[in-house]
Image (cartoon, rainbow, N blue to C red):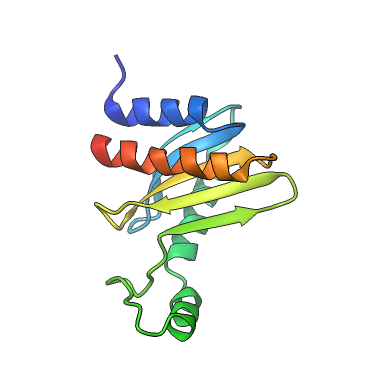
Length: 135
């Protein structure tokens, strides 16, 4: 029987349309705690995903932009009020969703870019909720 963390990642792989990677990241350490992939990937790929996500959430430029545009908004203890990061490339959609329960935990979902980005985002948001319950 799989543990709740494994189950949450397995659920993301099956419920998020065209999901290629689902992972659980600790941005305080920069470690991808656990991941699932539709195809075999070398560890270096997961290390790159973890490093890139951690850098994005800790980027001081994001905090500066937030401060300038959203006057009066409050940043988190780490200086960034970013909850979710969505990156769209030519073929892939990257969704990084920060936990509300533990600000150092992030769900990482990488899917093929398709017609229904909103559905991918909605399903991806459920992943962090499931990971929060599992962690």
